[in-house]
Length: 629
Image 1 (cartoon, rainbow, N blue to C red):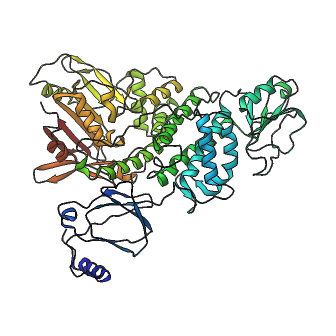
Image 2: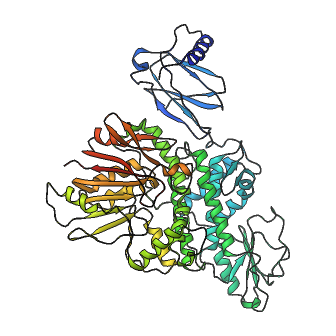
Image 3: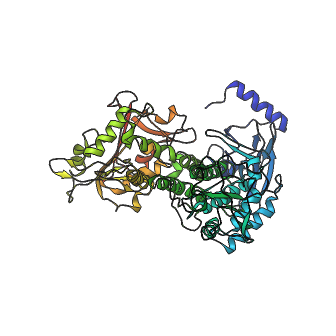
């Protein structure tokens, strides 16, 4: 846009402060919404700047919070210069030999000690033990957790919707503590008999010692020693030993003060010597300990917001993908406990088994939406938010599939009836009765074998075959299908059909190229972490001349401020000189999909239109794309 007079006044004031007589001919503005935002390496080589060829002067004015500004020579990427730019600082550059970037606050170096904890020693201890125990499962995990647990809760506070991190703390260190302690708690719960419960801290009056084992061991091994000893009724277990006690712990027992005997708990049972004692479930329960593990897992994911820009390159032995993968696996473990009435908890932190996350950054044509590095960082942050919304999405379908929720005021009655009808009959409304029309269009030029339709992002309600003069098979796929299968088991449903586990961004790993005549998605691509990659994958699996049909509620992510569940994107249609264009946008990224697909040769036609939602309310967006023949 043309610089207005008030902006020229500001520009002239900046030039006077720098002693520059010639007013710059352009200005670039970067808005950092919070301390995690950043801009990637760039050379200001856009044609309108021409800084790379004309050796133009660049003036950078910083406003607001202090940020780290980094320079590196084009011919020496390892040599970097960092400046700390505060509110009102001016920095000038007058050479074409540099790349520059702004980074969020550095929280991966961890030079300063935290209260009661030296981060450098903690890091060294962690790395040394992982070298000997890459499975991350020996007693050292409990010892390391007990030494850092208090620091974690003094520096980090997580509520359901908000979280706080001490301004001076080490985000990557806290993340490592969350990982270590979640593993410690999970290891203590795995393979422990259902007869056992445990307290948050040891009970004050432990009773008489039956036998002591002054060596580190897993809680399960310690409890088995108690079960083998006729006089043992409870156990004090921690990072340095296993102590068998003769006391039957009762409800309301007083616990030691926080900070005393760190890492130790009292394990107690209601069988054996204590069979006739009053139930003591009031002290604690498996559910509370599952909640404790979940708190730590969620804390680790939240802390990624602070260190996403530096964690993978730091000395800390945890990666972004590892943290997110384990949080996804924890969701499956929680569902497993529901299936088995809470009697079996099978989660264990995974380090070397790779879980392929449904996003990528090396997409052909990515330049259509801006600098690839900046897009990748944005997708990384959106992936963190996607993982945080996973439980919400699974819980939503759990509520709809549960036959007990017919009178639940928190469940949409129409959606619940539709889900229950599908369970009984296999019938679900998943398209606008136009699939057969598009099948005919897709097969008008070339004749293939059996017609095939893919309903991608189907959710749990997978459709059956469709009648188009002949019976046409419909394949359903969904990136969360594995969780929906668990829901069927929990609710004891025999589903009439079920989706295949396949993220939209990874359809090429599940299906051959040119396999389907029509690919259909309804109200699900906006759930994807990378919808552009999803569209390319949809086009990849459809036959030449075939159609990709996208039918979505208009701007659905806006109502929840792009924070509700997996709704991170909005779909809309905007007027353009050559007609209506299909647009995908969020507060972070925006792309004209019609222009991108046609200019890149990915589609030969893009039909975009709005139409009333069949159920009323929010308009539907139809973005139908034909693959080149």
